[in-house]
Picture 1 (spheres, rainbow, N blue to C red):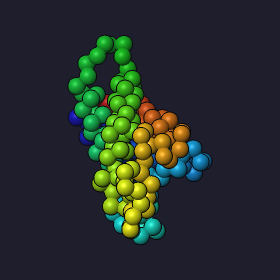
Picture 2: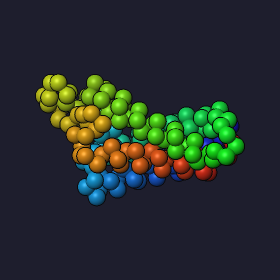
Picture 3: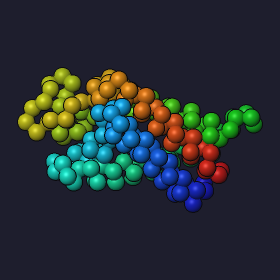
Picture 4: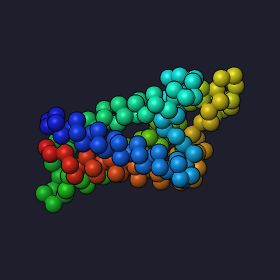
Length: 161
């Protein structure tokens, strides 16, 4: 494993993914704010939630980049298949996991998110993502897929096995 490349490009790809998701939110393409959603898992303070959520998302992205690096080292596909293609394929799989597994699971893990079956109560005021995170807007799945594709392509193009 090339630790220097992993540290550099894992961080860089995570910055791009986080920036794409933040821009999608800022431009009104999605109502989902990953930093806010993750930050409110850690604190009820809305002002502190954003920076904590960004730090949490950056750490998660860096850790997830290890899965991509492992894929680059284990995949010995055809010689014509570029590594950025492997990164894109893993990025698509990662986006599918986020949309189909992580988002539906989130209300059960998040202390301030309403359930899809029970709705808001007490301190649970965040809306649950719903199927494919569509409760945050019809373009949310597109933003998530594009951000994870960019993550994988950047890692695949820049990481040296």
